[in-house]
Length: 295
Length: 241
Image 1 (cartoon, rainbow over the protein chains, first blue to last red):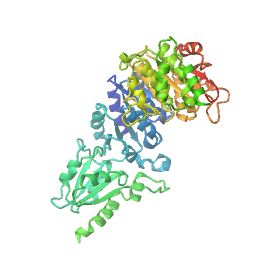
Image 2: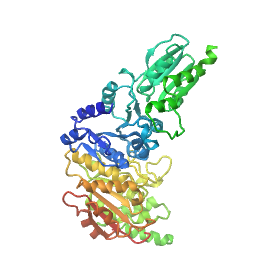
Image 3: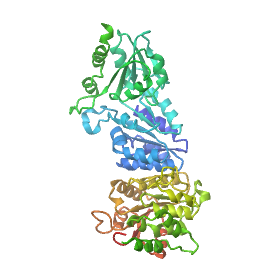
Image 4: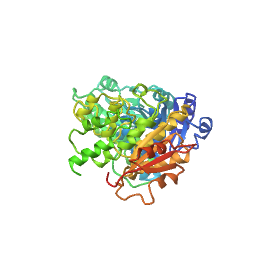
């Protein structure tokens, strides 16, 4: 996904309004673009507060910044700059992260970023994209870069087997018919979700755009049981599901990365298993959640 | 300082350069009987020299892409700022009478979306210089070489590490259209041994350290930038002023 992002963004630089702001991460990949557009590929060094502050200043002069770094450094370290140097100034930018959740599990806690979407979700009116496949990246990136507001694009080394472009609104991948539970899988979690529910009465819908969440689609698809599967902090979208279904009796299982610090290294697959986000773990949680209805 | 002494000091600091300015009464209007702190008094001369003699910006050009940018990073120093914006016609004087009120556009920190002529919303220290660096880069990238970006900070504000990210980077890339002004009233808890200016010059900035009360010294310092290096003016004012 990172390679696709760099290639697509390099094309965007043909528009003189586009500017890329980096803090060393991926600077080498952008080196050819920086040679062609030295004033519009800005690498501030390992200075994430400045990276976002500079993006705010660039936007104040009418440019469209694309800001890129590792998820925890981009969103957590520079959170006040995102809040004040972008939102409070009334300007927008497109933030693009790599290193989603536990992509670099062996690097340890400092490089884990499961809270990024929850933090962005404290802000108003952001678009958030969590692509599940590299081929989804160019289209959604183009849409947000050509827009006016702020957007967060969360790239990952985790991927589904195939791309589902145009899945901003909920896209049904398996319809289990009337009365079935509705599972909403975000980004690269959908393959495991499909595996986990292959023989269960569960309709599976996919989105790579958790914000704005497709609440109209949710209301159209839901019967009474909803299962959220998110590749970041568990429960991040629970408030939106609850609000969307406030007038209906419903049950909700919100699955995702747990808050506890595991203090374990290993691989992304190991962490998915430990957080119950592999197919077997999801199946356990989902059958537990549905068992009263199955009995 | 007694209230009456404060009033005298305000009147002195607000003395108009051309004798016709409405600044002093407008500042009194903002003050509304309260006692101004050192942070207000220390910035008055710098603000007036900037708006009277340096900045190329008028109420008619607040949206002109080629205007100079003035970024008040120490957002608590609003009293003189608001009075000046009223004196120069950016905002109606009536706005000064209800600072912080429920219907007021003027808070105890400024909001750029509510006040014409205000370039940034500030208040949390350490944000203005990064925004200024970005603004200077953005102007340069668009080939706008005439406008200059001025950022006003305080010596205690420089405690915030984000400033040092901006100082190092702006010096490294030779951001020649950026001027930082640091009003130094020696309020930083641990001080700046060796002087504030050294933090900038070590990173390739040009620097002028002047008496922050001396308008005839401030003017050449504020316009003393040259070449391809960012410029800092350290405006010294009395201890605790």
